[in-house]
Image 1 (cartoon, rainbow, N blue to C red):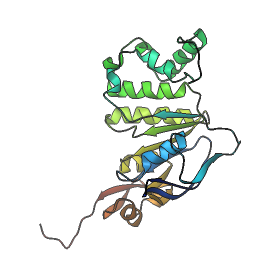
Image 2 (image 1 turned 30 degrees about the horizontal axis):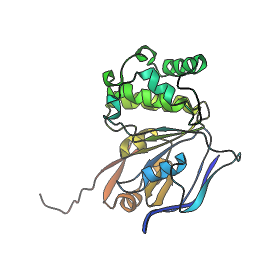
Image 3 (image 1 turned 180 degrees about the vertical axis):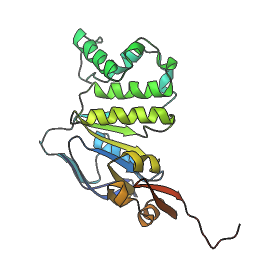
Length: 251
């Protein structure tokens, strides 16, 4: 269990996060939603350990340091790096303290198993530039899994990929949850979140809502999160966010 206790963060005098409280259970899937500049990536970086909260703390119930895997936003520049899929995945398990510039057989076997699990083993010797957006997303997840994380962070995993690939990414995420991995992802896609995620945290410097999308995604919460008036309708029991229709306005 991971506890986020009254976490705040500021860049100089500019507050980015304030009073963030949340508990993340093992095997839980949580989406963080909010507008640009809301602090989503900052919160992920705090969970990753790249940033230290200005106030508050993040703790693990077993008292040990968090083992965290990170999948960044898709970056076309990274795909131009001249390495193979297997080499990139192997780098995910490379400790900063390692003293040898090569990977042993056990590491290669572990990488092969992860690539097979994500159905991209046949692409092991392909260059990153040869991958489609969906294949590259899977390769990024594979790299993150090489560190055997208990917490997996995905920053905008649905950005820049088609609907079919989004569904595939979701299936992978649900499969990882069965291993007890806690998965936290950030996204701008409100309706994808509402349709597929069991829990969301609405964020705009502070937490404006936390819970099941059916309960959390109300017009008031959407307004306080995004500063825009939106309508929420139910479709097959799931909330759908649409532009507000002012019945009294004239076209």
